[in-house]
Length: 303
Ligand code: 13P
Ligand code: SF4
Image (cartoon, rainbow, N blue to C red; front, side, top):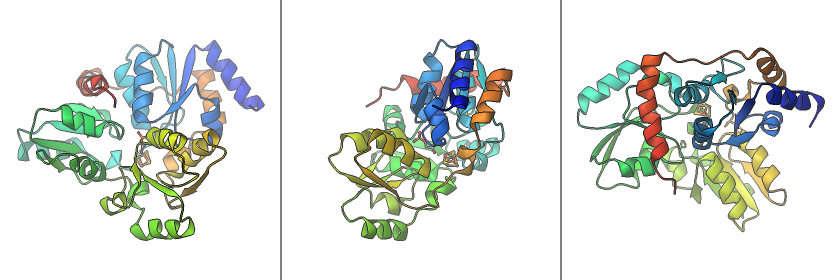
């Protein structure tokens, strides 16, 4: 750890704060965090921690989810402008339109969305549990928001349920093409190709494994393979290599770079711990409604 990182750890202790960081965060942020993980692991940790302050290093919907599950804690989010392009694609009127079109269908909302959307939903999901969430619903029609790629991936597991989806997507996963994967496979013929379910269906068809970010970390550790092509945001390459120094990881495409995930710096983090700001707050009426959807998701057993 460098001096700045040591100061951050000291400050976190003084402030009784826990630092949570998503697997796509810059290496120096991941290294100073108490916990790194995928969206599901970070939501669970936020819900369970007894720290008074949660400093969230990720994008705004993640900090908002923490504010939804722990209203009594201070949720500090160092750079408010770190948004999510997929979450920005959908508004409450889009949800109301889909509900009017499919009145009997429960609404499943990917956590990559803002509190207004979660508040209109029956249950949330992450990329790690979407299939389990849909399986748990006693319904033959489902509305799925806002990621059409995760919706179409989830649909593959159900013949008897019809998933109606909103046509949102993550630009940094949807950008990956069959041609990119073919070129990467040609360059690394012995590599396993892992894809995130936010990728397009034709890319998913080429994958040896489809996983959330932490699912990819577990898969790489457990696999006998020595080389992997990574079909997710390039930030995951750092923890993959750190946890598996004897294995090699190649990005499926350098285009898979989410700028919002790289905004928070160590300086920002230090300042946030000193000032305990900026703070993410959600209006209480929306929080209560969104909480139901998130809490219902957290009760679904993990497999
Ligand atoms: P997971 O880490 O939950 O797989 O999510 C990926 C993502 O796009 C987060 O923004
Ligand atoms: Fe949003 Fe995509 Fe960035 Fe994840 S990688 S935060 S889904 S824009």
